[in-house]
Image (cartoon, rainbow, N blue to C red):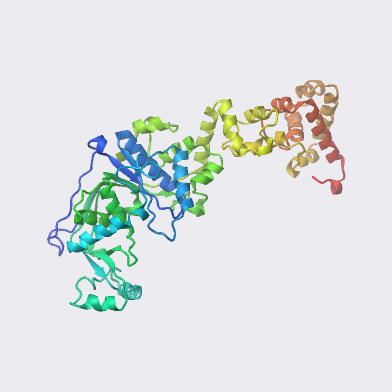
Length: 504
C-alpha cells in the first residue's frame, strides 16, 4: 500500500511526514542485524537468502548477527521446524552472535518466552493513551469488514472502542468479553528511506487502529517484532519485500514507545521460471531437500548470494570470505531474481570439481548404500565420475555398474544390438579376446578393423548397462578381467534368448 506523501493543501498535509535518510553503518561495532524466522515451517531458499544477506552485512561491517525465533503462534510453531532452521543455518555456515544456543545480553531469544515483556509494553502504551482495549467480537469485526468491502471502503477497524461511554467497559466485561489491545494510529503519513528502494511512504488513514495484544494475551506479529527489535537494539532490518506493509505499523510503534527507528532494506522476491513468486509449485524450496540431493553448502550459499547480488568483476564462483569482503547491501538488485535450478546444478558441479579426490570420496559416502561403503575399489569407482556429476546424489546412480553384481539391461540399450548387426558381432569377438586374457578394446579396432564408434558402445553397455558413462578403459580396469568376461557372456546369453524368454 505504498503511496506518495500527502501534497500541500490536502486534508492530511497538516500532519508532518516522517523523513528518514539512508543510513550508513556508522560505528561498525553498533551495527546489529537480525534473522527472525517463524518455526511454522522449514528453512527454505527465500529465508535462507535473507539470513545470508543479513550475515554478510554484519560480517562485512564487523557488526552482530542476532537470531530470534518468532514462535508466538503456539498452535503452528513446532520444535522440529526450529531444529530444521538451526541445522540448516549451521550447515550453510551462517553462524550467529546471539540467539538459541549462544545466549546474549537480550535473552530470551524465543518470542514465546517474552510474553511478559510484551504485556508490560502494552500496559505502558495504554497508560500513555496510545492504545486502548477493544471488546469487539470476531463476528462484529467480520460484519464491519464485509460492510466496508461492499461499499468500496478500506477494510480497516472503525475505532468503535476507542472512546467507549463511561461504564461501558464494565458492562462488556460482565458479559464475559475478553478484550484485545489496539494501537491508536496517529493521523500522519509514514515516510522512510529504504536502503534499496529509496523513499517509501504510507497513508496511515488506510491502516486503522490495529491489534497489538490479542484477547488471549499473545502479541500480534508487528508488536512483538517492534518490541524485540527495539529492546535488542537492532540497527538495520533486512527482510523480504513481502514485509513492506508491516513497516509503517512498526515505525509507528517505535515512535510511540520512544524507541530509535532502525534502518530498513526490503529485498526483492525470488521468482520461479514463470516470474511468479517462488513456491512449492516450482519444485522443492526446502534447504534440507537440497542437502539431501547432494548439493554442497558452499555452492548453495554462492548461488543464493547471486540471487540479487553481483560480485565485482562479474565473478560467479565466490567464496564466503570473498563475499564478506566485497558485499554491499546498497548495491543489491531492485528486481526479482529467478531461481534457476540448472544454474545451481552447474555451480555445484564447479565446486565438486574443485574438491580433492579424497574430499570428494568422503563427501559421497553418505549418499551411498551403507553395505557398499567398505567395498574394495569403491574409491576408484567414485573418482571415475567426479567430472560427470552435478550433485553427490548422482554418484550412486553413476557407479551402479560397480555397486551391483548383476546388471539389469534396459530396452534402449538392447535395441542397439537389434538395429546394428555389427554390435553383437563386436561383443562376441571381445569375449574371444577376453578368453586370451586381453581386455584391450582397441585390439578389436586394430585386428578386426571395426571403427571405434561401433566397438565402444556395445562393450560399454555390456559392462555398465548404459550407453554413456566414465572412460571405458578405466571401467574395464576397475571391474577386472573376471567380471568383464562374466558380464559380456551374460549379455550374449540374454540376446540369444527368444524375446518371450528374456527376463530383462
